Length: 424
Image 1: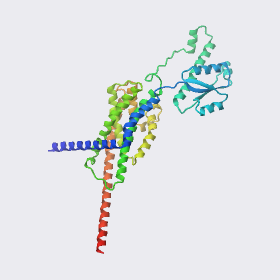
Image 2 (image 1 turned 60 degrees about the vertical axis):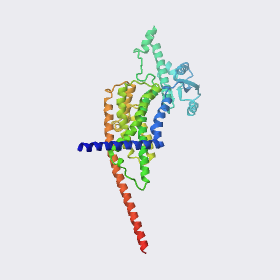
Image 3 (image 1 turned 90 degrees about the vertical axis):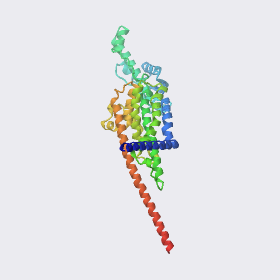
């Protein structure tokens, strides 16, 4: 008898969870906001972002030159900069005021300034300087302008060293300029581009943020509807906290199992980003990450009172979360407090594990710490979601009973007033 009762209870719970899944799926399809954040944004935003940075590097960035030295060495420096693939000398300005005017009007992206004593100090074998002014609004242009100036300066320094050494052969000049022949080989990012560097992390962050947005919109909609109803009927399927969490999670997991595969496997291949992942390792990382994001979004949704609140919260947190993941900013330079704070978010471990597995070809053993942390977060946020949902159920019952009591009192008062009016 006990086994039959337990089996019936399990069947009932599973049936209720399936009912909640069906209700949540219907709400998702009918809600335009949830469709946008669950479907359109994950599908289109990664394509737009990847397309913008698909060139990886910028070429022929326009710069203006202010050459106050009017010397052969100054012209040589400018000529070498113009010959580089990254920079194009658009024009020469008479003074810095004219150059700043061109930069402010976005005609050029940077300024090279050669001081009047540029050639004189070099002729005296003294150190001189070339001032580089860059537009910092776009990191790619800043990188191209600055690194081109550095490369030309190093090349000219090598020529001066060879002349001063008084060598007899070209081989001696090579050894003087570069005693150690260093050949940089960029690994995991052959083009040295911005897209392969940052976009894998952005894709994982998009997965988390769109999930939080969609779940938050659903919770905000439910609260707004309940707020303006005179009476909230209790549905048996929504009485248990576990079946609520499991039913809703089933709906979100069905959607993001497909979108997660799209973000993790399809988008990088469309734009020819580095893909070195083994399918088994990638699947093992994505499964706990999607679950952790779902339960994390359900916990966050409990503090959302209106639909608009979750948009402000997620948009504000997106950039800090990307920095805290250790992709765009070195993790070793993040203070311990913020490093500990970042462990609260699934994106921290999800981005690190995905970048190492997909871009660096790491195995599951190499990301064991992040893998275990994601499962711990999934379990912790699952039980936390159950707890906050239970609290909300109890508070909803309390408020509903209070409203019922007020309605009964009003009706009793109206009957009493009608009775007294009839007697009079």
